[in-house]
Figure: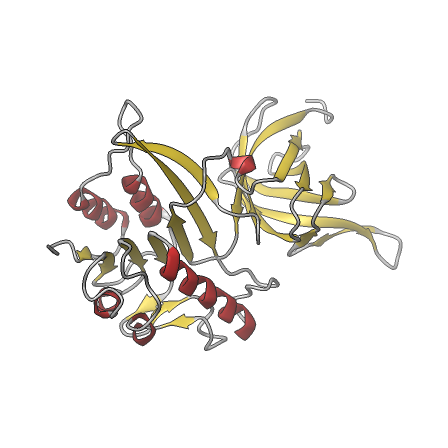
Length: 330
């Protein structure tokens, strides 16, 4: 296989931060590479790998916005890890690769990623790549905006917007630091105040709510049950919350008792035992059920009972017992 061959990539953009996903309904539809408006990913290809387990990805990030951004990570289902590196020359004159935890993308600028400079490495390839293959890769930006889609629901057009937040060491949302924990908690509070659907997946437990940061290293980023009872939430907007973590039942009661809700306009899916938050399966099932479409591409969400059964089946090795608070509200 000639080393000059390159493979096309399907690049999916998402903005960053771990443990919390928020969905809203403001904004229009866009293709994945246009999800951030005028921040674009162009000419994404990967050289035919000499090593069947490692490949280098070339791309161009064009930030046409007036806002500085930050590329904070990448991932792909076809690789065990995707990392950003910078080629440098050390003090001994040797060419070395140094991992770059985050890459600034200045406003009105273009940053090129090529072997020999900044580049993206796909390590631990899970399949043999052939010329012409499509490789899905997700790039995570700090400010790039939401992933957007437009769907039809009972002859109406619904704009679906998904924002993903997670902590990453070495960035402003470092979950091991007080400062990073505060940023993560702030994003969670803003999501609960404005979004239609909020999903949390991570460490949790009775009476201490969402551990948005690393609870072993910082006391910040802890959105506990007491906070949820008084946190700002819209009184006139119906919301759905998935609390995917261990023993989150009390969280459901906390949100229902919030005076902005007064037991109404909110449904919460929680657990009554340990859950397997190390896998994204529960979150994927929840979102799939929420935006399920029929053969004519119309929105046809699944019944709650079907979703809860599916969620329980994903907790292999656990007896999680998912349930929904508020489903019997009048």
